[in-house]
Amino acid sequence: MKHHPRLEGGRVADDSTSFEVVSGAGRAPVEPVQERRAAVQAAFDGLLQIRRLMNTTVADPLAVPAEWERHQAVRAVALVLEASEIAPSAVDCGGHRVATGYCVRETEAAEVTRVEWLGPAGSGAAYEEQDALRRCADALRQMGWEVLEYRGPRRRRYLEVEPPGRCGYER
Image 1 (cartoon, helix red, strand yellow):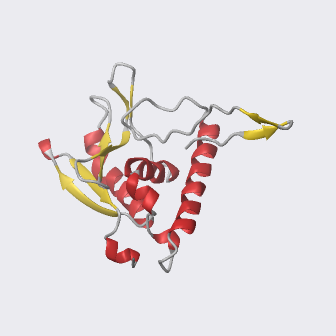
Image 2: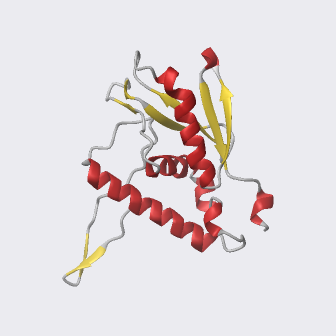
């Protein structure tokens, strides 16, 4: 989410900072923890505001993902997880896992994301994944996402996350 330019002394200030959602597929955020928490909360509040403004045809506009979320599902899902204080995974500049946590990725299906629990070799991520993915699923369901758990290669668990069917939007 880009910050909008602001007025300073009658002129527009160039604010080149931006908020990047942590999907767990890339590098860890570099800002201090308190600053990151504040930025995540502001982004999450923005997401709720988008829902209030866009979900005008449903009884509870905060209960289901808005159209914006459907089109940027990886960002929206990762934001919900980070706002729920679930740890993201991360990789170093060489692409090696350096942190255990969620990893949100696109799938071949439109509006569907995949959430895995990944960590560095020997970290025990595979042993944590059932409980950790359950926490992820709970956080996402509370925000109106549909979540299904699957087992992939080597019996590793993962989630597929998608917005509810169109019938719930009453369009």
